[in-house]
Length: 99
Length: 305
Image 1: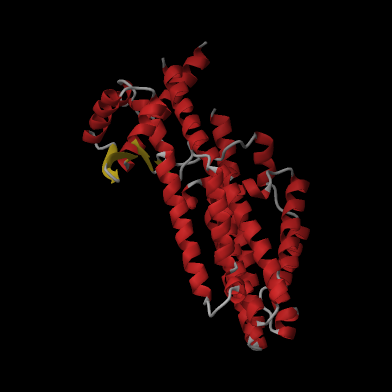
Image 2: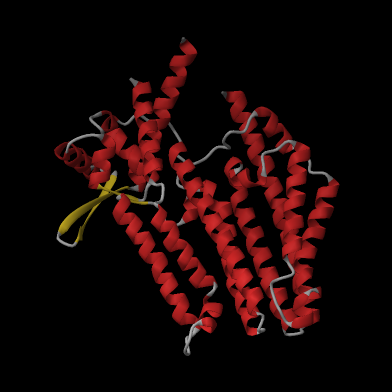
């Protein structure tokens, strides 16, 4: 993976959301909210930004009368997340070497 | 700040891995469905009335689907249903599929031969192996989630120290290749000389050969100090394709020779066994090349670090 900083991940819980979505095919809204430890509005706002960037796909379903929203990391999102992670790792490595 | 971000990523992965742990009721449903799928021919015979095998096997498949859906609803996550996307689960996934196919055909063969007790024993053993393989698959998936490994991500050989990398690049001894070839021949040839030819019972005589194959692999890893075979696909990502080929060749070879021997087509069965042996050895050589290439890459990465 070529390291590459992506400022999109540096705001709010977006990095945490993508880290969660990286290992699963789909995760529902409540799972993301509980794991990240943020409120409904924060999750809605940041997942919408990630969706607009093409990093996250949103699918709405229903169980009986209850609506259920599912998220998935797209291939573009996965690539960007991994590049950002590689950049973070290289930065941490460089800092350690400099100490 | 960077370390905080990385810690956050690790925390999320660990949380997801923990959430992916399957509940007890899934395992109950899975075990029942597996018993129904593998033991379909036996259960249908034991049930009163004129019950067909499919009348048992189709509901079992429905129970599999239901269990998967229930887990998805209760956990709020959907892991990939394609187990081959998680690198650590691939070998167990291949074992699961091969054992399932051979088990289902074997039980059918035993039931048709009137050997009901043997069929019941095979059903129990095959079901236990399938459940065990699924446990290993799930554990591998959780490990991969925790480590951030996914088929889509380019991988580097993991957890491979310089000594193990050097050992992996060394040549395999001649005795390994001789014993490996003998083990494959015993695996496939078992179907020709064993119960298949004598009493028309297929897919029973290959187990000793398969055990010998595992023993030979374990011996060479012990002698060379390389990682165990169960970690081969994870430590050396390039081995996955040739390992899959090897599994398919062995499964097709066993089924092919078994079916031909049952129909007393001995010359063709011997030819199939011979061709499958050649392809199996070729696949094992390809696995060897892949290990060497990945070990060399690991050594280069180690020097660069």
